[in-house]
Amino acid sequence: MNPKERFIRCLKGQEVDRFPVINPTSVATIESASGLNINLCDVHLDPDKTAALACTGHDLLGFDSAAPYFSVILEAAALGCEIAWGTRTSMPSIKKHAFDDPDQFKMPLDFLDRKPIKTLLEAIRKIKCRYGNNIIIIGKAMGPWTLSYNLHGLQDFLIETVTEPEKVKGFVEKFKEITVAFAAAQIEAGADAIQLSDHVTADLISPATYVDFLLPVHKEIRNRIGDIPVILHVCGKTLDRIKHFSDTGFDLFHIDSNNDLKKARQELKGKMELTGAVNNLILFNGSREEVKEQTLKCLEAGIKFISPECAIPPGVKNENLVEIVNTVDKYCKNTN
Ligand SMILES: [Zn+2]
Image 1 (cartoon, rainbow, N blue to C red):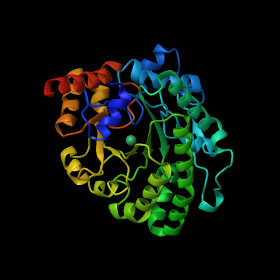
Image 2: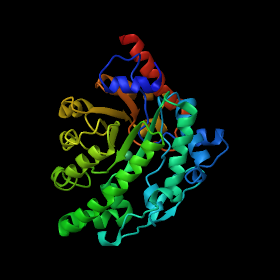
Image 3: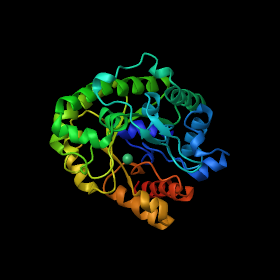
Image 4: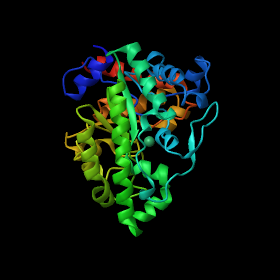
């Protein structure tokens, strides 16, 4: 069973040789990058380096997937935000937002040709060319809520959900076109699944805000992306809104270890599968034994698609990531 078959069969509830180990977010490490003689800050605008680093997820770590979008800023970079591209050992961040008002934004006709976007699309084509249908290529697009944080500013945007709800709706309506266009282009380039990041975390907004402003838009995005697995990613606490996620039609929810995983599964009532939730701090600071314990905790909670809970800190040691795969492998052999 190759990794792609394993993933697709597992999603359909069919029998698999072992549960898939995937990375809906980044598993790019400094260690993997050094092995390729590249710096983390140099990969984001270079399709060859992006593809090479993404492939280490499968080649070095043994994951079933390769995910070439390592950060959260490509759309923002393409749409005029000022970006700090990070260092040899860190990921990029946004320095200056681009839009004060939804009326200032018009979807650019050349969006897909802008360098940060084009780089990712070319990287996906290269990975597809190398592996064909043997592994799962996970593309990624920011949802309209996270795009609003990135393009307009998190604090202003959150305040406006209360003071100027029409403005918030305006941003979401406009920015959803970015999500759909970027996801569709990645699918065309060869992505087998799309991870949609939309940070509607409990620390930031209420479940009612999610339902009012975003749930209908998520349903629309699901329909417009078409028949391909979509993984919703929201880090942090989400247990009180998880039942609403199951109404989106997305296939998987990428959950953070900060939530009761068993309760989360109950909330989803089988309408959506979970992926996660190996704790990032343990991956970063912990021993292989502790990583194994964390991975077993996820498996015992009934999670079938094991993954790190979020983008890992680049300083994580590769041996800790390999330990996730080894643990899933042994667990599935023992329970078969
Ligand atoms: Zn996250």
